[in-house]
Every structure is written in structure tokens, then in C-alpha cells.
Amino acid sequence: MQANLPNLLQDKRSAYQAPEPQLSDLIHVDSPLLSFGQFHSSKLLGSHITFTNQSNRPVRFLAKIESTSMLNPADSVAILNQFYEEDLPFSLTKFNKKGAKKLQNHTEYFSIEEPYTRSLVNEIMLELEPEEKLTLIVVLRTPLIAHANIFALLTAYRQHDTPKQVSDASDCIRVALCGRLQNPEVRCLKAEWDGATQT
Image (cartoon, rainbow, N blue to C red; front, side, top):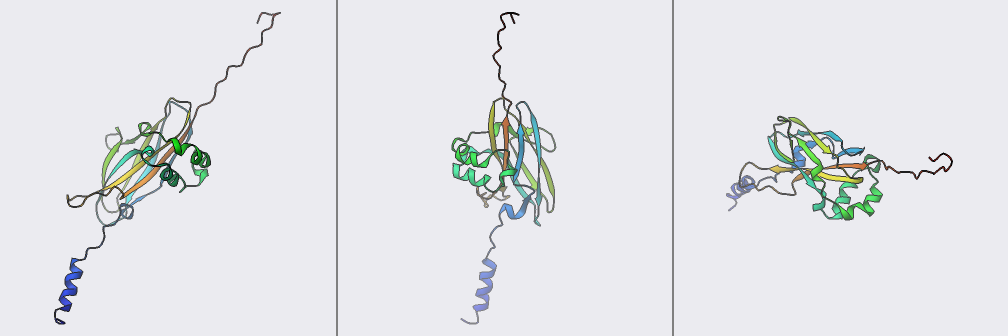
């Protein structure tokens, strides 16, 4: 039995497989927040985000625009609480009290610019070679409403090459997309009637 012990240990070592690294271990994102600041309606705004493959293997992932309305309010607040309030385009304190309770689907305002065709899409499949970098442009088409806190997500999901490796929905990288739509208020002042001049 003792003579076979080294072989058993060797078999166990060969059978052991190291856990698959998470996407965040393989891909680096230059910023977890894309803030478009405060803006008016009828604007077309763009912001850059860079993905870098920091591993020694090719990595394939799906980048897509997603709504925060699919999250519960606590998760939405947790995402924004990662950042300093001065880096956000709206008051985080007010958002925690009001905005998180009535999150809406803002995905229709955001698009990803396809880097080769320049077309605007909601999702794109990407593959980066080791140490390769790719910069995407996220486009915001501001809606025709009076005011709103715009909040959505750019989520990157790991994609595996073999059918045996099932993509895990939790194996992802999330980037917060936010902005504050604030149109100026137009007020009509009531004119004073001058009986002498009839004006």
C-alpha cells in the first residue's frame, strides 16, 4: 500500500483542476463609472471606456446595455454607493430616498458604437488577445422630457468556447452609466396692463 501512495498522490494532483478565473481577473476596465454629467434634451453625447486583456489567454465576452430596473432597489443603491457623490451627476442622497424606488428602463437612451462599422448597437461580442486593448464609445441620446436621473448598466459577460463550459451570469463586469437631464424651466410672466397706453 505504501508503495502505491506516491502514485495515488500524483493521480490526485493530475485530477485536480484549478478554479476558472473570473472575468474581472482577466479583463481590466479603466473606469467602473461613465458619467455624462448634466445636460439638456436633444443632445447626442459620447464617452469612452477601455477594456484590457491582462491575462495570457484570449478572452471572449459579450458587452451589452442593461436596465437597472431588473435590479432590486438595494442592488442599485449598492452600485452607486461605490462612488463619491461629487463624481455623480445627481445627488446620491436624494436618489437613495426617491430614485431607487422607481427605477425605469433607460436602455433605449444608450448605445454602443460598433468599432468597425460605426453602427449603434445594444450589445456586441468582443474577443481580446493577451495584452490587447479595445476602446468602446458609449452613446447617450438624451430624451425629450423635462428632467430625470438617467441610470443604466454596461455589463460584460464571459463567453466560453466549449459547450461544456456554461457561462455564469454572475461572472461579469458592470459599469454604471449615469447622467442628469435638467432642462431649463420656462416661465411666462403675467404682463401688467397700462390703461393709459393700452399696452
